[in-house]
Image 1: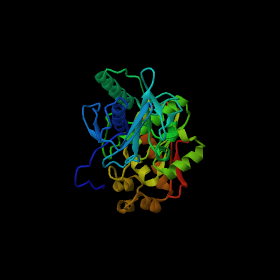
Image 2 (image 1 turned 180 degrees about the horizontal axis):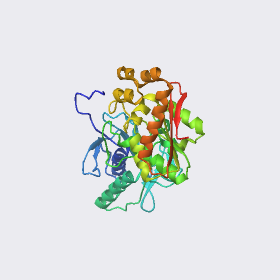
Image 3 (image 1 turned 180 degrees about the vertical axis):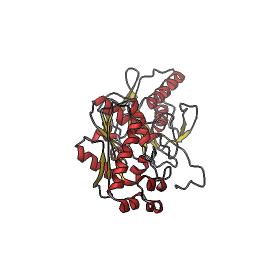
Image 4 (image 1 turned 90 degrees about the vertical axis):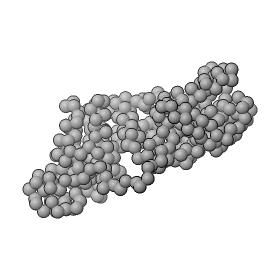
Length: 348
């Protein structure tokens, strides 16, 4: 069982919140109020955090400021990244540009249409709100271009789902509340949802969700699926299947190692080791093999029971998958060993 921390986990701030704070700081300089050491913003739910300004530059017709992202105790790849906002005249209204390290949307299905900078709707609204609030207070027109950049963002983006979602060239500016809550499943599940949205918009006939990199490689090769058909399911089988039930596609393959697929076969929806366990008593009864009660891992049980267990897992995992999906969605399962060899399939 996963060990809980001894002290409360520290929350952090989204890239959208950091971009908004950087925009406020840059506007202060651009509109003649000087360089601030720190700025305060209001988040969508009313919180008013203060951010230290860590970067500053100014030239003819522009000003930029940067905030170092603090993701709190969340294992976020963008923790410590510098989020920079450069402001300049737009001629009319608030406009957004993707600077260095911020991606462009290239495929439909995301909240932002193709051709636009990968800055999500809530961060856009937050930045627009800052522009309009400050422009009104200073009696100035709110005609501003906001260019967001994240040095090293293109490299960081390779560790995210952006390439598969059709976001090219860098990171997305994300956040719905402005707050990162440590070890929340929400961000991962939201990425699964966006992957399904993209697959639907592309009219893909077949997608796959796998528990890890090895099973993903095996399943992708088995069916010759494109990258954007591979949904980053991880442990969140339930999160994927629940959303797919509401946004159906013609076919889904669920693949994984014997351990996580055994839990799925036994009805688990969250396959994380800290949130679900293999029921060895039930497994022993199902396979009519009392020795399985004394196993410590599903792999150990498979080593003893062999092909009969693998087939049982594939078939019952498929039953679990089908129970969550409408009849119109065809499903199959693929079970692999540690080396990526297929040891059982069902539904094909």
